[in-house]
Length: 122
Ligand code: FES
Image (cartoon, rainbow, N blue to C red; front, side):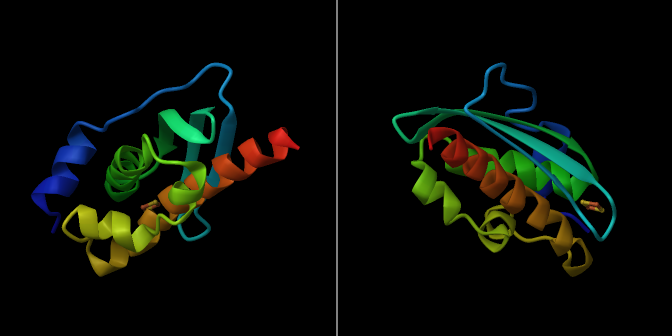
């Protein structure tokens, strides 16, 4: 059912944890299943220098969060905002169609954490 890349990121998720004094924190819930994800960003000069996440979710949610963090680390916040759940799923060699909703959690957590960062800048 899952690609090798999904299994790898599920079993060895990258960037799991918490960042103390993060510059942006986003918490989102998936209305379909009730799973929750929290994302922490450390940002320097609009560049994401560190990123961590915690997910109370399924294998797909964990794998997509892990891949999403890898994809936006080192990017500017504006570049990171362009990340789509579809791009994350493609980077994982696809997700089963019934699990696509899980990948939305990662995209929304990134956006929510960046929004928090931007609000703090004001
Ligand atoms: Fe909830 Fe996948 S089943 S995020």
